Image (cartoon, rainbow, N blue to C red; front, top):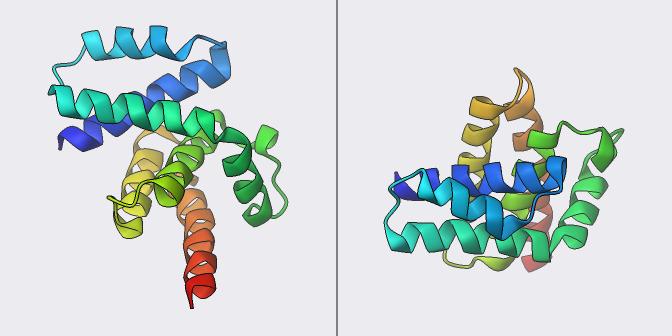
Length: 137
C-alpha cells in the first residue's frame, strides 16, 4: 500500500510541475511532509517523479504514437502525467512488472481522472506493452 501512496505523491508532484511550473523538489518535499511514508517509499516517490521528468520527451513520443487522434497537449493533465509516469516505470524500472505498473496507472486514472480516464490509460499502456512484447519476440 505504501508504494501506491508513493505513486500518488509522485503523480501529484508531476501534475503540479506540469500545470503550475513548480519546481519538483519543492513540491515533493511539501507533499512528503504531509504524509507519513516510510523512507524507502518516499525515495521511490522521488525517484519516480524525477525519472519521469528526466525522460519526459521520450515518454511523450511513445504516448503520441499510440494516442491516435490525441496530442499530448490535448490530453487531460492528469491522464498525461499518469501515462508518463507509467511509461517511465515500464521503460526504466525492471524491478516492477509491467502488469503491476499498468494496473496501478489504471487505478490512479480511475481515482483522479474522469469517467473515461481508466479506459484511456489502459488502452494506451496496453498497446505499448504489447508492442514491447512483440519486439522481445
